[in-house]
Length: 124
View 1 (cartoon, rainbow, N blue to C red):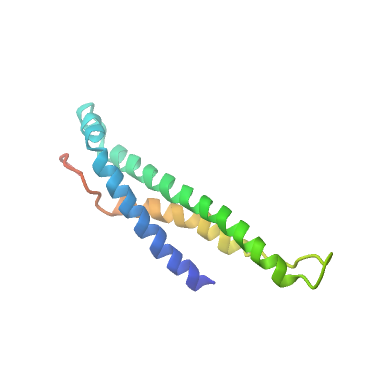
View 2 (view 1 turned 30 degrees about the vertical axis):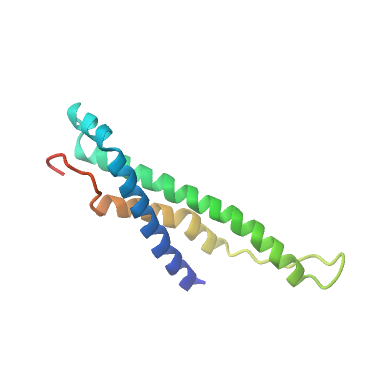
């Protein structure tokens, strides 16, 4: 399962960086306004990191809901022995916490490190 987490890490961080770079490129006028009123570079980075956290967090939650519905629909007929028999479902809580909480936080931290397209102000 941890191999799947590694694959999810690559997809989530890569997708989040791509989407965040596109959002940052669209945000050039707002960035110029923030620089004009004296916002420090860390504020601009925090805005981009917040966008990344929102993008990856929303994706993780939607994926969790879709995976839960699909997983329950597939696991129930595979684990019951007959009518009235309760389904046996084991939930990997640590793995789910790593995917739903850890990956968005890691993707947001990666945007603080990676250069973002559209940064044209001085000092950053």
